[in-house]
Length: 507
Image 1 (cartoon, rainbow, N blue to C red):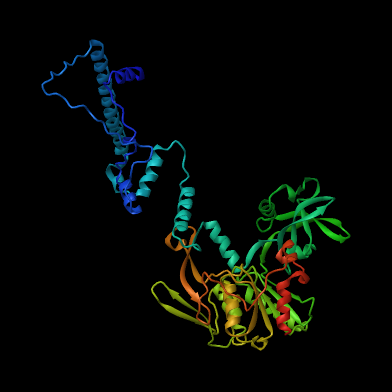
Image 2: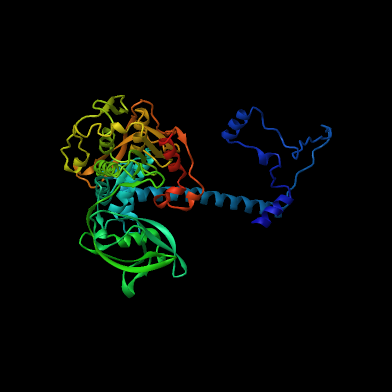
């Protein structure tokens, strides 16, 4: 075909497109773009504008007689026939494909299928035509999660039934385990640097405490005896999952306990898992000043108010007169939890926060006596005696915060600032000033739950910090030496923010 085209071209029967015409854009978008730029398209410097000058013709001169050879006629006829065949094939093929597609879809769209919405129709197409077996439950879960993610509400979430049950347990401060809080770490074991799981605290009256586990123990192996496996052979999450299990089952692991001078004692543990109360509040006496008690709050679940009150009371009995409340890396928690904790410092009728919904409805939450009907919230009850019981500490408090201090923890910081109860030390907080509601789908006959943002909230001063954060009065960055440590095992002497807080208390 190419040879035939060349021969016809050589005889002048087929013309080629000029170089100028190759750049002509007939798309309207090209015209719009040119108009936007404020100029007209012009030929490029490589495009010569050719003008052909023809000699004047003598009208009396007889015109030469046009002749065409037989071979030229034959080649032209063949080219025209081939072009017609190709055009006919293209048109017929297009029509055929269109009708074929319509015929395939007709079986699905007829009858009641025509009333399906787009999502239902796609589901039915896959059900009838997909080569693969489909798991409708798994698909539904992923679709729901994708829908929630597409709403633009960055705090919204869809929970499956299992995830919702875990959420309820976390909020209530309950769980099943042996009663230890752990972090990922590394250590030199038998001359080899290995990944280990470090125990940073042991819950009081827990199975772990009864078994003799101690803070600082390093879990190096999962299992005991000859069948134990190195934690180093798994990733952290996998290793932790092997420590978890149902109540009544046994967790087996081998730890290395520091004997000093780099020597470790290897100890095997078999600990029965039980339902336990989580610990979110930790207390200690300042190493630099024994008159200062340090209370770290890791979250605001429903057990925190009682844990917090117990910690402050015990430190007071130990001789502490001033306090550092540490809410660094505290992601927040339940409104009733933070409401109870703040009530310990405020007077009855004081504003804790105000809220605003999409319709413009405002509501103010005040300090008051509260008795919750739901038993799981009993730890957040507020009695007359609870209100203002730590108000005498005003001016003797420093609060530590950083960029991972969020939500309810930010409200704690803001209230302490707004009522002039404490000096705020550290770094600007995260900036989450919105409230989420979790709605169980069980009420509608489905499993799981939906969490979505329903209100914006404002601290006592009325100035919101959503998307902005709270800037501390004393801005202090953490020391370079501290970066080599996990926050939860950072020595007090290397904690520059804690040192600054102590300075504020002694100014």
